[in-house]
Image (cartoon, rainbow, N blue to C red; front, side):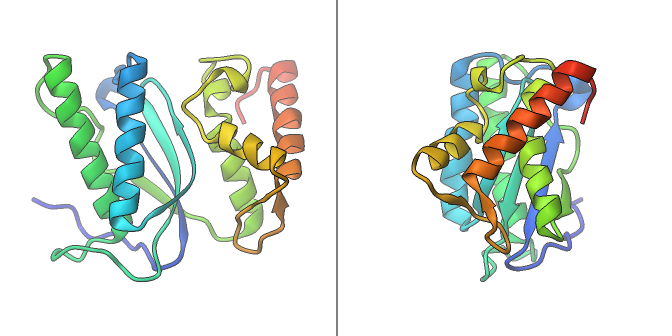
Length: 193
């Protein structure tokens, strides 16, 4: 039975995430991560879904996505984001099952999504997504984890560009300051943010 259509609205931002069944590892090698990322960017273009931020970890992922202005849905009335996630997870599941001699599903049910309603929440979710590998103690230094959009944000700092937000006031330099501050808090207090 197909899932009920989601309330995903044109031109809005969404924090989208999912994890593996039983919290098992589904990304083992650089090849696994790159396969997921390459398909993620491929299906993003195919569905016209914008990827603003991402983090891929050993057993889950976080994405900050923008639903396109004109829906690129299917006959079942799915949003472009729903179509994008369905294609991405289906593709990676087939790859995983073939390469790891596994059968069946690897993701825990339907993806979760939260609408981004204001720039303050947007800034926090960008930081949350990019620092997720530090939060889960996969790395101590976020610069050591290549499967996050953090590095793209740093490149924007070098190019003196702004980070796109709903009201366009989040500078790349602001991002850097917030990241450094958040990492220091985590290290000092060993807290999850």
